[in-house]
Length: 114
Image (cartoon, rainbow, N blue to C red; front, side, top):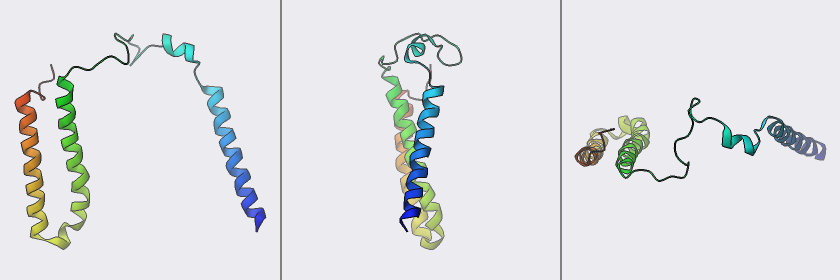
């Protein structure tokens, strides 16, 4: 009985050791990360921790609106046949609320990418 548990622990420990060793063999040195090119060979133009312009926050809200929409639409699609018309009505109310959010982002200029 304990032989099976011991063998599983041995396999787990050896797998972790092998992955760790592979990581150490293939890792890039930290000094090389400073001089490596960024994004398809382009040199970075600003520091990685620089601040974003405020217009990107509106674009982020738009992304979150669509992301939350998909988060709720997948389970809804599974149960809509069982719930009937009330589920369809609730989804249209939810989509209406998201449409208000998208119209607000449009008014704020979040859809202009320049």
